[in-house]
Length: 148
Image (cartoon, rainbow, N blue to C red; front, side, top):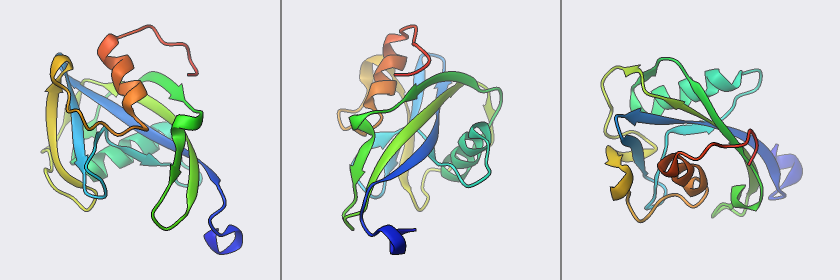
C-alpha cells in the first residue's frame, strides 16, 4: 500500500482492551517510545473487532481475555500519527474493557519493555497521547456516548 501512496495519510482501525484488576489498569511500556498504553493494535483484513482486540492483547501480553465489554469508539485529530519514516495515519480506536483474563503475563516482547498494573490515582505521567482520552475516561468511569 505504501508503495502506491507513499507517505500520504491512511485510515486504520485499531482495537484495544482496558484490562482491569480491581481498581487497577494494565499498561504496557512501549519499546518504540517512552510511553505507557493499553494492549491493542490494528485490525487485519477480514478480522472482527473482538478478534483483533483478543489477538493483539495475547500477542503483547500473553493473556487470554474472557468476556469483552464495549467501552467506546475514539476518533478525530488525536488519532493522527506521523511516524519517523514519514508515514501518516489516522486511526479509529475501538476500545473494550475486560476484567476476566488468564495466562502468564509476558513482561517483554518485541513491542513492550514491561507491563504493570496501575491504580487510578497513580498512573504514569508518560501515557501514550493517542490513548490518554480513553484511559482518563476509564479513570473517571464516565458514562460514555458510543462514539467520542
